[in-house]
Length: 197
Image (cartoon, rainbow, N blue to C red; front, side, top):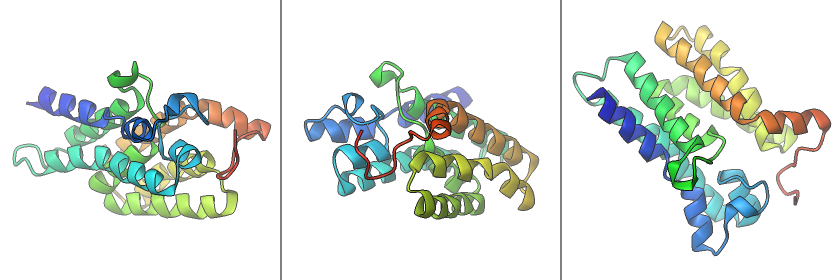
């Protein structure tokens, strides 16, 4: 049963909504802007409405698998299993088999996982993202700062040890997926929202 849940989470997370929405508009996001299939590139290459739809769908990819596990009587209290399901959802988004294992950065899907798995910490992460973005106008920097603070927030909120572990793991995945962004931030060449590549 656990394997089925992991596979469901991975393949549900693998649905490349940004790519699909782009294709419906006649645009292959892999060849425009940053080449990413996530919300930021949809906003830059297509528009606000499509970006919002992509954001909500990508968030659902993280939230729904976690919520499904939480309502199963024999699994709903297993925080470690729920965390693993969340990780599989995020990895599905980041390495979707539908696009030769090249997916998004995992931010929106991770937010979905957080909201379903550790709701208060998830809301705080969103708030930090919004504040950082209002100041910087840089999506990647907002993600890096908000997720850097996630383990500390989880610790201060005194969540169970399993959740503390996965908070650190979620942050690690986000940072690994943003290595190129970090390099551009250090060089001062990272694009702000509204900039054209």
